[in-house]
Image (tube, rainbow, N blue to C red; front, side, top):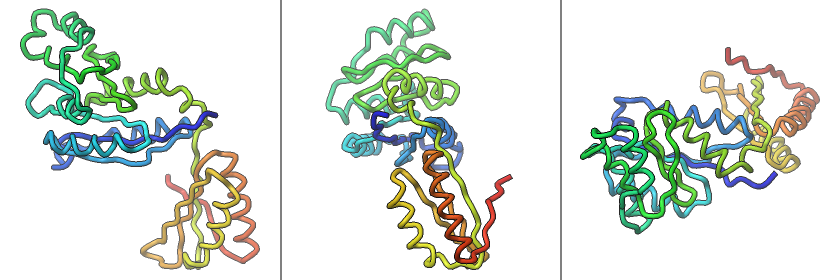
Length: 252
């Protein structure tokens, strides 16, 4: 499988930071990407101020990940993502001819004077088709700018993955296996965890002590199912050889 650089998310909107709307994109994208053995490596939540979005984009452009940005590409004054992207890339904001045609076809005479603003995109932008109302998102390099509405944004994100990053869809679904280990301090497990990581490239480990039971550890293995299975077998053998009591985590 061709290497995939991983993913970052930008979640844009004052309503997210104020708590008046709860973000739904992060959990959805986690599950979507996990189904292809991929992971989100970082997330930033940014308000509507243009200078804040520019700063976030200037940082993300220097990172290797594929970036999905949700929100702020509409026509109202609080929608500043299109303008911020143009500023971050150092290009003008200009009417995109194909976006103009799509918006005029969708809204007719009602496209002007307001809705047509959504066709003003950073110069050089590539369009992302919107299956709901045909108002497109756009891409710049490996950054992909989508509306904040999940019913529009999620199929648009899947389109981007299929069309631009098929190599990122070739991996087996990621999996996670978690167990509770009783009467064991976290420090006793560190050499074992380091050994598992060294012997199984691509394996991820989470280790969470139970704050109510200081000697109970929630230990998780995640990654390719085959790798998780091999590492899990070694983990269980070690626990049984050392007389440790353990049981699978039941999240139901």
